[in-house]
Image (cartoon, rainbow, N blue to C red; front, side, top):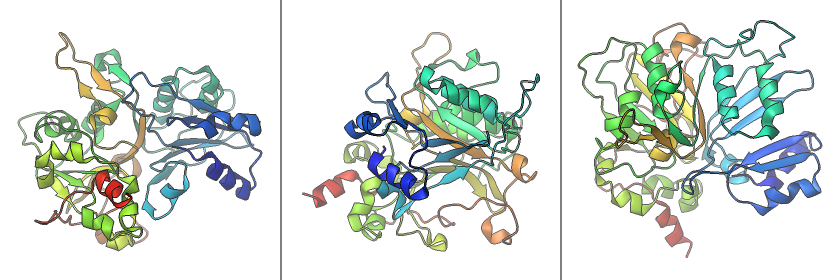
Length: 391
């Protein structure tokens, strides 16, 4: 979602109102479609979707500088005012990526996490010649200082065996990276999901969450064997979390979970935890951020910041009816970054904030731990509450 008037105002006040700007967007918007007639330096392109239920949900910026360098920004915030006021969001900003001078070694400037290759694959998935200059710019930039992995989704049916370097999209991509690089994780350590919306997840927790998605999110680099499926916890605002937010029920405007979906999955309530972020003074700032992680008293084993909510559309679902290898069906474009301590601190875990001083590198979780499960009277916030209040 892009409010072009608000966005251009930010550029104007920063002194960059005349800089070239290209916007790929998902939601239909006449102002975006016509801005090029008024501002010749602005080019916009609506991303075509093969499925009407799919969403161009990625929040990414590629920033080019006059010295030939660039940055990549992976965000959870849409480009309109509400997402930047009284919300909890997440941003990963890359180091400045210098221009690679002519080099015969095409691998020169790649990161230890192959971020450049992953980003190029994602950009090429748009199959749009208008972004070719950006693909060239990325290819000629030095990503060697990047220490996170790109975890993305693109719409379509994907066969993992068709990629020589393992699955490239959705939850199989997460499983592949964790199996390669995560330290062994104790089975008592839960998978903790936190997102601003929830999809239709099936008749039970085993239908898709633990029956497919969780099989990949539970992985680590320990040898395969009989291991217990970890617990699943979901941090999502309750009705009272939203009611007590900075904006009262309007604060739930960034939480588009529907009553119809919630009514079909009553089992989910047993896994829900309150949105509580007192340590960061953000309990009243409703979360549009989306994070996934596993942690215990030993520390944080991995942390994912992403645009992807907990849904089949974002992460994919295997077509079980396929005769040979079931393809992974994804509906959305999504993008996120995976933090693994092996590539950042050369340790097996990131320390919890309570275990370290201000000079120690760690991951700052957006919510308080220990988690607070829903009480007997708590219900998840659904968008229908806001619609009723606005009548």
